[in-house]
Length: 191
Ligand code: AP5
Ligand code: MG
Image 1 (tube, rainbow, N blue to C red):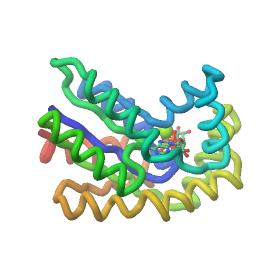
Image 2: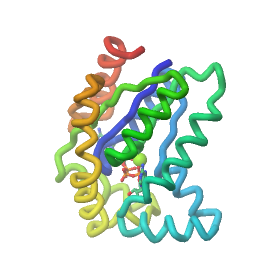
Image 3: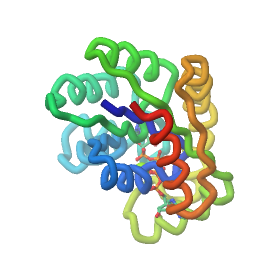
């Protein structure tokens, strides 16, 4: 089974590369951002709380995310080829929880980190904001999301580096070039 933690700043191409990986390798794709946005559209009380956090570019609490991931992993079908975790984990506490959960189900994962220059991230998200309808795709919130990424998410790179399953990819290139780098990693290190 091939589990991939696809990490990177907002706009680094996690969703874009996930769809390429799904097409080529037949993995499942779990985007925690998509799961949360789906909850918002239900109009539930929980959705309202999530909306308030996402709209400002803040993270949803770790315990709330744990429920989403536990539920997902525990209901994976037997014949699942693996999962791309897009946007999870996003804190060291989430990384620790995911390691424990994967271990419980006798699974592991490699981490692929999409590295993209800040100016390019902002350009991409501003451009996407013209059509995405995402409340967090505006300059102020984009800047805040990037700051949150540096403060809370970047430290997980060290966590996976210590575990020996960390791979960095230069995400500044074209979508096809970035995917080529990912394919090389999966050919050599994918399990
Ligand atoms: P989430 O939905 O994960 O958003 P994000 O991390 O901010 O990232 P994006 O989805 O904006 O970008 P992406 O990296 O997927 O890039 P994409 O491929 O779309 O999370 C949203 C919010 O949910 C968080 O802020 C938080 O509040 C909450 N949340 C989610 N997970 C959580 C968790 N685990 N814990 C707590 N809270 C959580 O590409 C962007 C644009 O660039 C697109 O238009 C694309 O076409 C273009 N593009 C992509 N690659 C290239 C390329 N190589 N060249 C040119 N253009 C490109
Ligand atoms: Mg995304």
